[in-house]
Image (cartoon, rainbow, N blue to C red; front, side):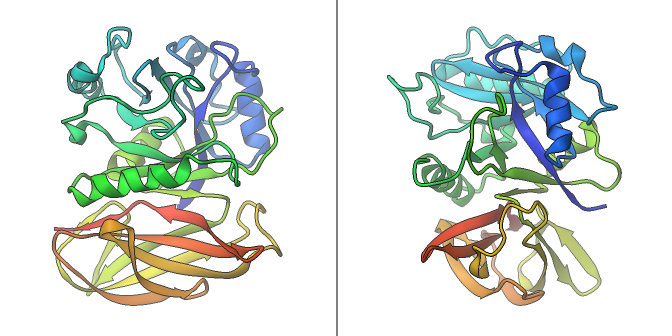
Length: 314
């Protein structure tokens, strides 16, 4: 199949959301999503009410602490979040991984105290290999959201250190009352979307954050094809792009001159091409990561529309 739109950060009345569980699922289906993750604060109680016949769902939880929020998806056993502190987070994440869970950092650059106590990531992580993804885009987009750009920089610096971390978007969906421009995370599915395949896509780094457009790439060398998240040996390759600017009808005439960028270490753009470009030839270098970004101008200002997770050059 292909990359499908998902929402990986949702809340219900089991914590501080306004949805009943089935209301959330029905609303997600009406919004054209293919899968959600239920991540109520510090409880999985709502997971018992999920009905995959409405829309497939990941059973998860948002660890909500004074030192950051962590999304734990698909864990088969309970790992106690209540005594998580900055210096024992590696032990906690190791236990989650041993229980089959996928781990993401939620809104790492959210405002901290006194506005959002605990929302900013302040855990002392040494074993980054236990972390699967970072929520680089969060909530609604616009001039009032000051979190996203610092979160991308945070992610870039970790990629530069050699850590393999996927990117996600999180609406942090509590109800339909809040207005704004919301995005999605595209995950790659090889068959019908389901919890296990979504978790595997996150483990493999096959994700794209987007304001709506469907945008992804594959890398070709000789007779081999590589997906987002793969590791590739140095040398000459071809990046092959799929771009559908109107996949979720979130962007229409307001787009001005959309472009594709290939970005590498340090967040540096090394190639820029028109959005209808299908193939870009590039020599990739050892120790570098490469991702694609889709940008446009809106009212004369440049803004990102989509950012893929990287491929890695061994």
